[in-house]
Picture 1: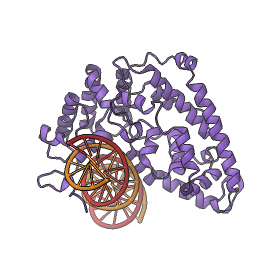
Picture 2 (picture 1 turned 90 degrees about the horizontal axis):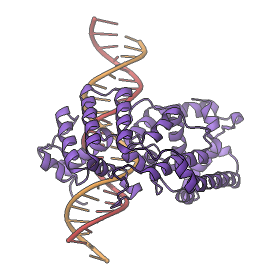
Picture 3 (picture 1 turned 60 degrees about the horizontal axis):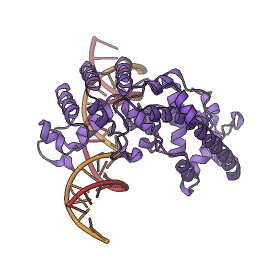
Picture 4 (picture 1 turned 135 degrees about the vertical axis):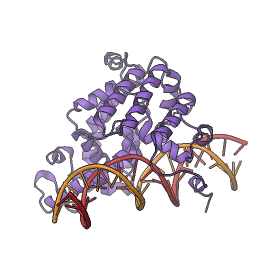
Length: 322
DNA sequence: AAAAATGCCAACCGCATGTCC
DNA sequence: GGGACATGCGGTTGGCATTTT
């Protein structure tokens, strides 16, 4: 059966975090950087299990998180990615660096699933608008060709995007992690329905990011390790990561191309430009999922449903409903 | 105004996966 | 190679907030 869960210990507190706990956690991470979660409860005196600490940090406290108010574009991204990837929320979140997997999952379960159900039931049997049920969709060969075309275009865009001249022309080389982080934190505080206590913590984090490049760097290493695989790579230099940030922006465009997005909305542009350290790392050239990987996966047996769905549910069609 | 119903989201749980010795 | 431990991920739930009756 394996070992008992870490949270089974007696004296481990559960339930909502208090501002005091948040501050304890943040100040500890400020000093030591994220990671080694096992040691966090002991070293901070928090009566929380390590998992709880990690979750609290990654889903709530870490800088650069944007909360609430999903934009139309984000909605479309999520819908499309969900069709592509299924309920792989962490993978989906890697394409929306400022959103946590938990946030996206919640949003999907509470908003988008219903929306889509409504749409699908409303259009069932009506193939006009190009929105028919999967069972009567175009043939496998047709959608595979369509998909291959998309992927080909995306690859082309990617290679263009990653060409040196494009990278140096993007004007993002002045991007500094701290500024990005600050703006993100600010926007998070503005747009969300945070409890005031959490806003305080956001302010605390602002100061931290500004004052502690070392911490900011370590901080960046926590996000989406499975995808980023950033072990030992100092991806964020003390002066920021112009090239990688650029890659991120361009890759977003590439992804946009893959999905046929016409343009990112302003909020997305802002996100890209004011990217937090971890956000820029998300956008490192090795992540999110490389297209080739996605491509391989797409042609894997198990995802035919998603592909069928995609073939019928293009973003353009979908956009009519949002 | 109060009770009931519904929505929403932070947090928990347990399994999967990665890493280290 | 394999066991123990640490971390990540996705599904689920508890409880607060909001809306409806």
